[in-house]
Length: 354
Image (cartoon, rainbow, N blue to C red; front, side):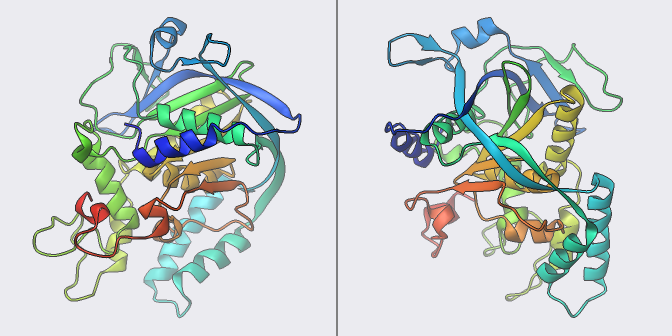
C-alpha cells in the first residue's frame, strides 16, 4: 500500500526540471520475491510482459500512450566493498565477542574501529544520478511497486542447492520479506526494491504486518517495543525500570528468518542469477532501512525513501563501518514523523501503530 507521505513525495517529484544530458537506462519489472513462511527460503516469480501490460504497473506518458518501463539517469558512484563477505561476517562475529567481553570502548567505536581495520576495496561503479529529479521519481515509483503484486503464479525456489521449485505458487497469506526486481533492457543492472511496513490500521495491510512490526521493533525501538503492561514486547529483554539487556536484543536479531539475513540471502541470489550485473538497492520505510543495511554490507548503490535512521540497527547487527557511506542516499520530507523523530507522547499516531 502506498503511504500518504510517499504519495506526496511522488507528486512533488513530478514537477519537471531541466537536466543535463547523462547516460540513461530503462528498467522493467522482471521478478517479484518473498520468503517461505517456515524455512525463510527465497521465493521468486518471473513476471510476464502480458501481466505487466494488464496490471497497475502501466502508466500514461505525456503523449497519452502507456509505458511499462522506468527510465533514469546514471553516473559514476564511489563505493567501498568488504574485501570478502567472509571477512565482513568474521568482523561482525569478532565485534559481538568483544562487546560481550565488556570492552571500555563504546560499541559504535568498536564497530567503526574493526570495520576500518578489516580492509575494504574502493571502486567507481555506475549508480543512479541522485541529483536528477527524474531519476529519483523513477526510483520512487519502483519502490512504491514493491507493495503491489502483479497477481501471477510461478514462484521458484533458489534456496538450498539453488534448485527451482516450479510447483509452489503465489500464496496470498505469505508473511515474509517481499519486493520486486527490475532489470535494465540489457540485464547489465538489477534494481532490488524492498517493501516496507504494511500498515494494517489503514485497512487490510496484508499478511506481512506482524513480521514487518517484529523487524521494526527489533531494529529500531529502544527495547523491543516494551512501553507498558498493555504492550506485547517482541523480545524478553526488558530489565525493569529504564533498563534493557542490550546483549539480549542483539542475540534476538541473530534469528535467520528476520529480514536482514533474508535480505543478505536475497542479494546473494541475485548475484547468482545475474553474475555480471551491477545491483542497486532501494526501499521505502522499513524497506529503505533494510536497503541501506544491505547496501552497506555489499557496497551497492542505494537510495531509500522515508526510512527510519539505521545507525542503531547497524550497531545492534554489529555491521563493520566502511570508510565512506556516500553510496547510500536517504530521501525524506519534513512532514514525515519517522524521519523527523516526532514520536513524543502516548497519543502519537506512530506509537499507536507499532
